[in-house]
Amino acid sequence: MTHSDPSSSVGSQAETAATPFPPGARWDLAFIGILIYLTIEYTRLPQMLPILQGLHVGKIAIAICVLGLLIAPRARPNGSLPFRINVALLLFLLVDFVSAWFAHYPEAAWPTLIDAIKWAVVYFLVGRIVTSSWRLRIFAFLLLLLNFKLAQFAVRTYLKYGTVTQSGESVAMVGAGTTDFFGNTNDFGVAMCVVLPLAACLSYGEKKQLPRLFLLLSSGTILVAMLLSGCRGALVGACAVVLVGLVRTRQKLPLVVMGSLIVVSTVFLLPKGNRERLRSAFSWETDNTAALRVGFWKAGWRMFLDHPLVGVGPGNFGPQYRDRYYGSDPFPRLWAPHSIYIQALSESGLLGTIPMVTLWLLALRLNSQTRKHLRELGLEGNRVFEHRLALGLELSLVAYMVCGAFLTVLYYPHLWYLLGMSVGLHRLCAHPQPESRVAVPQEMEMGLASART
Image: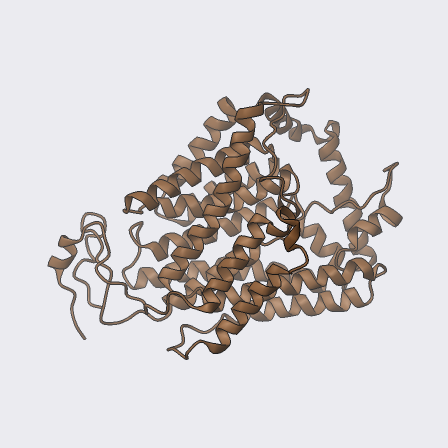
């Protein structure tokens, strides 16, 4: 057993002397494949380039990942995959399968089940492939870069066209006309809110000038785009992140700054129409959008009471609402439940909701355990990338769970990428190298500079 040299800590105040974690491989086929898939999902390339629609580029990227894992040389394994998270996910998929089997509208149930399985595969691949500090940095950078691209487009659209509605609502709606989880203002706002804590936490303590500048620019642009989207659920989620973060971490400065920016932007920069939408939420009976959403929740609750065990089937809320539960809607359509909790209860019943909510709570606990393990190693602080990443992932999950109470994002990619990165980070931190240690600046970690490894 060796001792760290205090002089080495003094000589590297801004940088880490040696990573305490296994270096692992950098580039290989599996990692390239998962980066390609992430890019495809967030740019919606097949929708932008119709020539690619028949090529199934997303499936090709997943096949590259699987092939890369199969041919990769065996290396010293990182920490084991979290058993409880995997069990909760498998139970949810099993209940979804049973629910789809008995669904009244199988044409909607089976595609939704396939989507759930696809995201489970993506989570598994990210948790198996992105398991080194370097890969986590690259993956997080690409994720933020893709969201920054969409955010800056929304901001530029607003600056160019201003407001276009009579009520003065912002035109900053979606990213480059993409579909699916950027299909409307609310979905776009949620996407921005989920990555905002990750960008903010990573920016605080980053010492390299260019990465820090990018992270700060991304944080500010994503925050502005989220506010311009007019999504009230996203704003509630951002406020919840600030409150939870102030309780959960000692690094309170970035959260105080984030909270201050939200307040100032909401009061002074938010378009008039968006501010009116926020005020109308306090009297939802007179707000058409809020009243309609409450009607969806009541309909979903009725579906759950009628099918309490396995629900009406994945993807069946829309047709069930249209044909049986639309209530006073004079023009019944394929509406969404506008809540991941109502969606889980109505479509998967109690047997599906329990493992899904358990999955979210276990993911939060996993990042908390990672930060606790880092503290035990003397690696706590804003100078340690892994600690900042664990905090950012934890707060991003909080944002997802709060925003999801108002929007239908259960089968969107946000949760599954966050979950995969959380697992990869936890597996990395499970095996520090005993012969090395991060050199932490003495003015911030007074008692750790000469600790025994």
